[in-house]
Amino acid sequence: MAQLYPLASEEALRSQYVGKSLKDIPTPAAVIDVSVASKNCDQMLEAVQKLGVQFRPHVKTHKILYGIPLPPSQLPRLAALGQALGPLSTSVMIDHSSQLSHLEGYCSITGHPILIFIKLDTGYHRAGIDSDNPDLTRHLLSDIRRSEDAGHCVLQGFYSHAGHSYGGQSQADAMRLLREEIERTLANAVLAGEDFSKTPQRRFILSIGATPTTTSVQNIFSGQEQSTEASDLRNAIARAKQLHTVELHAGVYPILDLQQLATAARPTQSSFISSETYLSHNDLALTILVEVASLYEYRERPEALIAGGSLALGREPCKAYSGWGVVTNWNRTDDQKFESFPPEKWIVGRISQEHGILTLDERHALIPFTTGQKLRVWPNHACIAGAGFGWYFIVDSSRTGLEDMIVDIWVRWRGW
Image 1 (cartoon, rainbow, N blue to C red):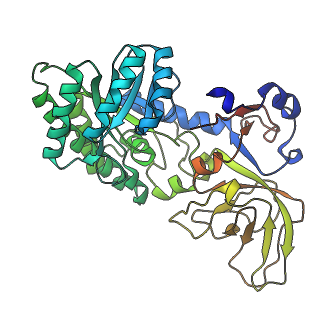
Image 2: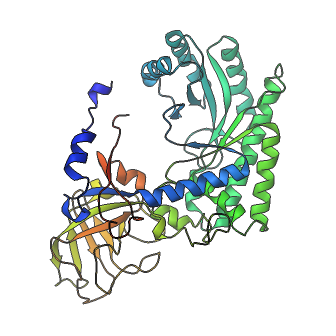
Image 3: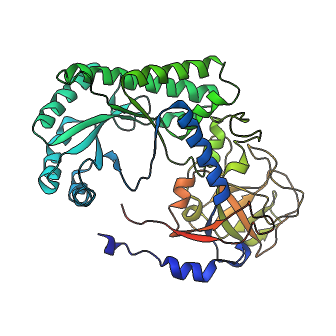
């Protein structure tokens, strides 16, 4: 299938752009600051190592977990991948007994069983069986046991995604939701232990989290470990580890975005990594480079047009403000710069497919931009914004005096 989704040549892109300034490349463009992304990764990994739990980034190359309950039409492609990677390499989620019959095809193609996670709904109501309904769990476990006995699959564990944690407002909210998710997932694993009674010592993987809840474990080591929420979370993790393998997962944690900033899930200061203040706009690694195309000084409130709309920024809202992106302070010398979040200065206030309208909620203010000026915008949701680009321009803000220089190109994988 790879030939159906040809990728741009990394060699040609690097030859064209590496060494150039961001001010000299076409727009719109997706830019990742590798220094910021590396720091976010280091902080996450240090936290899970201190907790003694496993960690699964949502994108893996050596051990595959298909991200939603498997559509049957995808099985031949997944089986081809599993055949190339070998036994115990590929996992899928299921949340209904009708999905089990389709897994037999995987085994017949690869010659080995597929690993499965039971997808639990612990409050998000997107996918998964109700984690608070033991009858549903027992029924599914019984069917899985028969499929496992037939050699078609192996139950690896339980998987939950706390997407509703994006509605949280604080570190305490995120820690509480993660604790509840752990407790509900553990209760279902206990039921599995009862059904799989022939193997009483069997340890399942409890894969838990979303970026707000998973990154909230950093609070445990940030000087807040004596808080009730942090103490309760640490105890819940310890109880789960006694019986099973705890695995935290997250996706956007390396680059973060305005939605993550709005959850306030991570600590604002850390005593175990550094004394720096973090979880701020300085920790957002992805920006979208845009160009000012026109100015509208005569409108009641000043506005400017950028050549970048929903195809460049996505159309995901952020609960903290009514806009589609926030203009950063890069390449600006005016006195209307971004100061704090939620923003009070220039935002992408309106958006359509190719157009973005920069707005400022001040009557008769002067527009600080010029036609042709390059700007960088923080998107609300980095995953959606980044998906619109075939490659990312990589810069490194730790290179003093060369912060705008492109140091690499990362080509994004295509296809479904």
